[in-house]
Length: 266
Image (cartoon, rainbow, N blue to C red):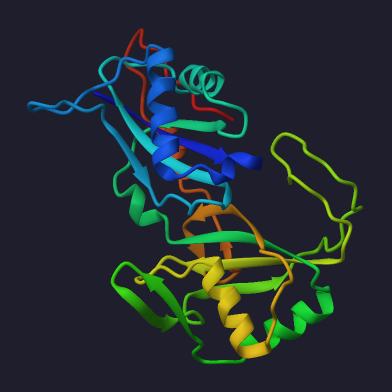
């Protein structure tokens, strides 16, 4: 059985699709593309698809991952292109590698997020960030199915800063993969890196912490995009490519005589 790891996106209005919505869309794409899927054993066989650490509904993402098992070998790049054509714009398959290494989920140590705060000036955001980072612990509340849970939002934050670009031109747009509306108001754009921990700390938890420590309350909901998830470089506070090990291992595998090597996407 060949296994392929895929990176896909949720862009524009497709960020409002739930994880279950994406699963249904992806299974239809597999059928349209005639992918030779491997199936589980038992009375109700299911295609071998595993998802890793999906982003919450309403959050855009450039770095979602899944793994599929194939009954027959396919070129990863050709498979990526076929699946991408079978999915709606905004749900885009942008990378594919053949599985060469184990423990992929363990590599997803952290996520890098971009948080856009419309109606908040960069100066106010910078002040709030300074107050938040100065705390050793910032307790926030989240309503769960088991009731209200209180946990520390500060400890999981590896980096929080103002992003270089702060103010948009303000023209209203409805472009593919972009924001639905550009308001023209001043905004602050934050770069946030959060370690994956238990309980999981999400960008909205950090925003709750900014409100608790600095009374920062944006007039409209924040627009959140996951830019990356993978291994965390603690020294620089950056998130690196979790597929890099598979690419390196594929290049190191010697070819059998007459056997073409599957090519990963660039």
